Image (tube, rainbow, N blue to C red; front, top):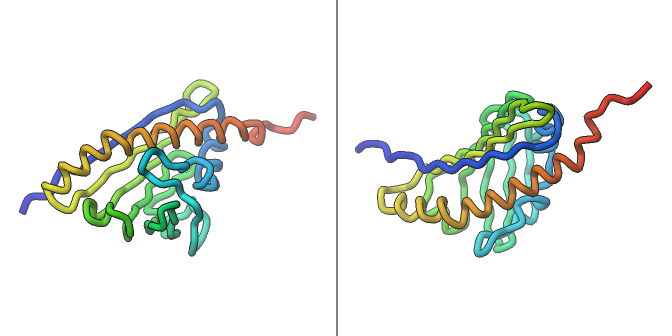
Amino acid sequence: MAAMTPIQVQLEQVANARVALAFKVIVAMDLTLFLTGYGWLPAAVHVSRQTGPWNAAGTTRRVHFADGNSAFEEVLEAREPFRLLYRITGFTSFMRLLAREIEGEWLLSAEGEGTRIVWRYTFQAKSRFTGMLLRRLVRGSFLAYMRQALARAVHYIEANAHLSEEPRR
């Protein structure tokens, strides 16, 4: 049986902060500050059983959502300050019926005095049929959810940009 084509969605935005700070803020950010829900997609309400810092390969955690569901996340690769790759599995929501796993990725690069942030999700559908449903979901509501979340993340990064400035002598 041939492997199904992954379903990918990606957003980009420039933050007015240096790359190193943007990465530090992203890996330390409280998910409830930027995964606030969108339409029928629930907000993150807390994280449990985190095994270490979110910038270290092998770290795991369970993310809990406002609708009572949760998902398991694991950092696959962390190359500070440029890349964070993580896998999402163990869904308890309807997503368990549609996807085997989701890979999330943050890619950061310098752009002038700021940082270009690329946030990508790659979904592995369970079947061709669920892939068709998943594609609609991802390109519609989920993309809007991501757009809102990325804007909140960039706002949070920029609100903390002063933390990277060298102390004046």
